[in-house]
Length: 193
Image 1 (spheres, rainbow, N blue to C red):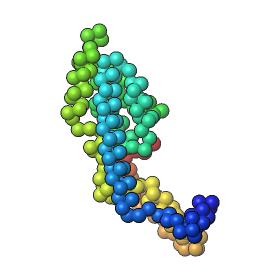
Image 2: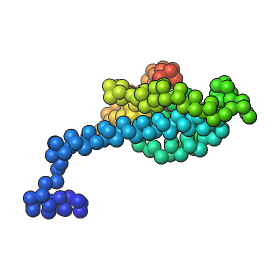
Image 3: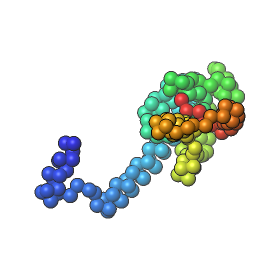
Image 4: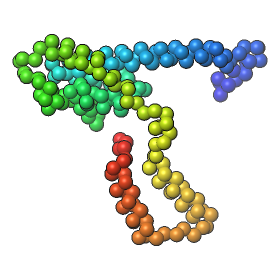
């Protein structure tokens, strides 16, 4: 409320509050540059952290970068780390070393050296970065939120009951629908913690 009264006061004195289109365009261009820079910096840290995890078995840098990047697509980052950085995300939001992946890529205790880490960094720098598989706006807009649909159905039932309407309930059809829903969601559902 205080911000609204301040805005009214400034406006009454002829001060413009809303940014002009040219200033907005400039700020958007800055965001675009910052986003590109941030993604590149994260990619560099991920590549070096992967090498660190491979050579030393230490995932501390991966934990640190993951915590430091709230607001970016951490789902994509976690998948990239699991696929490329020898670490697995745990339920508490930290990573643990993936010994099996390290071994599969040639880690041998006492023999793996910094040069192996350098080669891994080069490999990851030449590969697609972590953010390239982000969902497009079209994909995001097409997502179907099952929980949201169920909540909507519940609200419709509650509203109908409140209006005194008769609610048809065919237990066999409902059970068949739930069975079918479980079958469909087993193949397509994206589990959300």
